[in-house]
Length: 474
Image 1: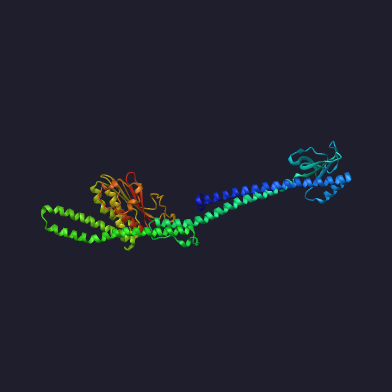
Image 2 (image 1 turned 90 degrees about the vertical axis):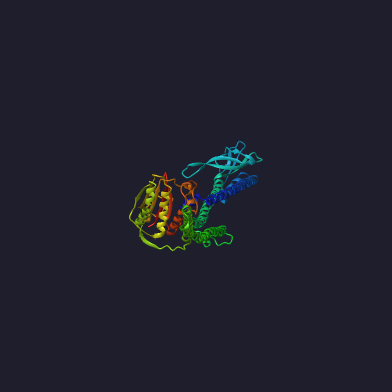
């Protein structure tokens, strides 16, 4: 996983591109160095042959053939690394003396360079063709002098230098790639720490912050500065969200008391009002009750989210709780002609009974409310991951111990792009506003209860309708 992440990361690709650029520059530099070396080296070889020919011709002019032979013998004894070959030939290029077998058939290049191949005796009376470079000079007596040098030493030296340059280039590329991998791995490790913290915050824990201590301590570190700026931004976002929540909670809290007083006054007035005003007052009382219910739901969600409501978690028979919820809403389903199917698996869980009952009741209430006349609603309690929640993987060790409360309906459903939006306070889809009255707080309360208990609230399409699952880890 980490290897695939490193190889696919932009940092690794950028580092490799940098290594490639440096390698190309190194290659160009090495080619220039090789060209300069080759030019200077071959010039040195040519100058060495020219000097050797000058000495050979001087010996020949001073002492003739015998002095030339003596020069050849002396030079053969002196040189152990660079071996020169000498030939003296007459006007017809017939060999007179020298340590080559005869006057060679050479090819002439610019600047007086000569090149030829000649068989050299090896052990066992065998011979091997070998290249020579040579220079020649015509003497005043008409004889020809030739000084040659084997290509073997020259090519071996050039090959040695070429090998060093190639190995240097190869080492540059390999070490550069390894360095890019190490740098990317270290950067990816620190980036993963940031991403894990961000995912925690995205999951709803706005109080979490990036840990500066896990990043480089350099004052000018880009990652450290990024983390500091993100933390400042998160502080600002949390302040704004807390402000918005606080305003709505304060409004609900401040208006609940006068609204309760108004309702009580309406109830008192209803007792003394005339018959034709009775129905109007009753309608006003119902509207006041709806407003009070909205304010109470807002305050309850706020207390759950802020942790002010202490969850009294106890071990309870979850199947019995679901059965009570269905029994509560069964008359409403019968009234709409909805087929209500119940499928329970006997199980227990640890939770706050009142909060969990309210959350399950809200889910069932929504399913029945938005399912048309004669529709179907299935309420089930199953063990394990029966519905294959690919988007919400659970720990494989606890998979069998987990429990899922599911409600499947054949109603209007929710657009998949709005699955997260419906958990916001007061949010309602446009298609549902005309179907049923409501305040858009039911699923917000379910989400708050699920978060308090570390449950997973999952929506899936039912074609038609909606699947709502409350997944509880064992």
